[in-house]
Length: 297
Length: 298
Image (tube, rainbow over all chains, first blue to last red; front, top):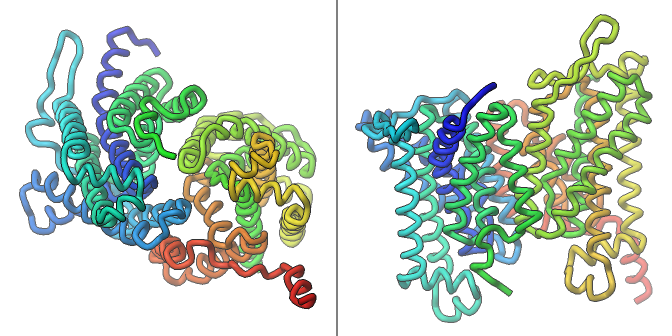
């Protein structure tokens, strides 16, 4: 296998652009962790589930296909509420293990519902309209239009979330709940409403990421959920759990590393290196890139 | 009869996997790496018997030692992180192992046939038992002797000081540390012990199914492994055994007539149990004789 400098640069660019999807999923994990100090393992599954609902409704009522990208995120938000109710609402907040296991249960449940409804075969997913055809050239380097759109969306949503968290009353309440649960309740903050709104926000982001992932690959399949879950989690951990910009940067980095090793070592081995990257970080920087943002007792 | 032997074997492997996760849960570590150690044990002992023609007992032992060595290595970076981060790190470890075996090709010609791990095709022809004239009931009893030995060892562990040390670390790390317990030693040795048990389980699994591939070692199996002790509760080892019998024997085998819906039920079951019994299904200390004695004293 031979490749020049330009190939490496091109693959890094493609990877970083595709990494926006991991960044968005990692952002969702980090948001929920930041609010509740819990991992919602069913998060990527509900994102893909939302994309499926969008696709299903659009084909059922023969709606224009761009509506998939509108229905998908909303459906993912609704599925997230359901996941919150079954895996987090009733389990005592001190029992981290319990809600972790319950959300893994929800992950398998959503996956199996999808497999059951589609007989396990992947479906074709509509492309992202004009963005899919757009392809920019800069010298010898190409940029895929749809991936650039996802990346811009990811950066905008990061900005929106930072605004929501740090400049609104809702954000103030969310941070209060995450810092001192009991004190927040004593101040009259309805913690379940706050948690649900975090879940809905994360779910909408995830639904969008799920639709985008399916659109940029061209097919949607329940096989997407586990890799996206793991890579999103890795993005959240490398960025430092709870850190918003960390998740975005780490997600883009994972995309770049993944595509670089795809070029160098082939499709079968690339994920090994992504996972090894996590271990490198765990040994050298266990708190992640920006892990010191949230300090708790 | 073959069918029931199959179920018994299956319950045996899953019990061993569950027990290896149980040992780690005692120290408060939720590890999804057990399936990685299971895979290492399976491939290592399979390679030993198939390619090097080693005796099964030796191969199982060496496979388990190799698995526990990797567990030892994983234990150190895992020390620096806790709880949810450990879950993610161990998931990544299991996936690295799975992908490594997915890419491993090590074919050797034996008697005109190519044997050994063949990448995505899996590792076929691990035929030690058949080649040495073991009957199915020999295999089942061998597996269950190992299961009972491990069960007994862990039950005994709870009766000696080491068990209390493990539980002390699991209950409150800070308090354990301040009473002079060396966290590093405790956690790494629990990890190593768990790796050893999972390695034996892997070796037994590879030899009794005669075929393994990377699909046998997914995150789903890792989830099963930690689900058993969590469902069964950490009061004693028998909780894990009952949870395995309940899930593998009753739910998975008993509900075969449901077909596709059975898989839906599994996720739902975890959710329900966690909501209604967050501390595990079996919380009654069934074999705690000391309590009876105390009551008589009063």
